[in-house]
Length: 331
Ligand code: COA
Image (cartoon, rainbow, N blue to C red; front, side, top):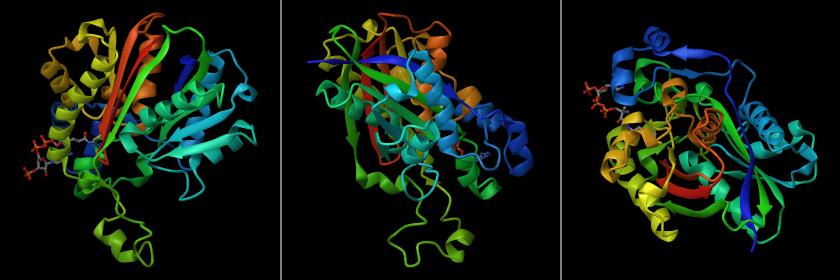
């Protein structure tokens, strides 16, 4: 059977930097509170008129170039986002239009923080079965247009930022390289611990002025519960990947966890007794970019020389749904 190799990676973040000090002017918060509890110092926000499809296009083009391929060499697109360009059709269709490659399949994934790993897993199955040869997998988010930037929404608003990251995956005959395994989980009993209630098709009409006034159009989060669940699930799903590949935690060269909160990553590392230096973090500069956080971090780690050919890399995520997932890969 074929293996799925990572042929190229890319990322793009919008140029506008929003510091904690800027948020202090919009809501009752402090740089100290945000840094102490999350590790975030700044994030990127898009300019008006820019959506996830625009961010995704830049990341995708960078990944295709990194793979030394042309857009026309791609035969399927998978895009993960919780902040779609429009309600429908999927953002992957808008991305495909921008890439100028009509006709190939385009699929949206809606599993929030684990979106990129679910997308990676789906792409892996398509490639291993021979259905597609080269798949573009993208995570792209624009949070800034959908968060409550007032004191009412401060617990959520300070966490999130905009950005996109992309992989080009391709079939390989090398049994020692590529995606070794992926592990996907969800528990819908906790769906309302981190969710965006409206607009919703369950409501008639889907959105009302009252819903806007009450703030139901903004994400709601039970921060403490999400935090403790993440700290529990990250080690569990990473151990699952290690056991399934008969690897030890020390065999892994680099750990890249979804950038939800620096304290979550540090707690997961401590629980597994893995040195913090083995984890790549960039939440300080970008905040939580949800489906985009893993591919952005991966590409930055690669550019910084932290991922080399032959390295074993662990990816893991936890978030809204709840969903949690991991992937172990050999570069
Ligand atoms: N600035 C200042 N104060 C804030 C604030 C902000 N941005 N947001 C909330 N607060 C206040 C609260 O109102 C509360 O005040 P009160 O005690 O007077 O009621 C207090 O800070 C809560 O502080 P604390 O209990 O120390 O918060 P915490 O340690 O639970 O940290 C989070 C809050 C959000 C940082 C933390 O719960 C978290 O990171 N959760 C997971 C979030 C996450 O990763 N989500 C994405 C999942 S992928």
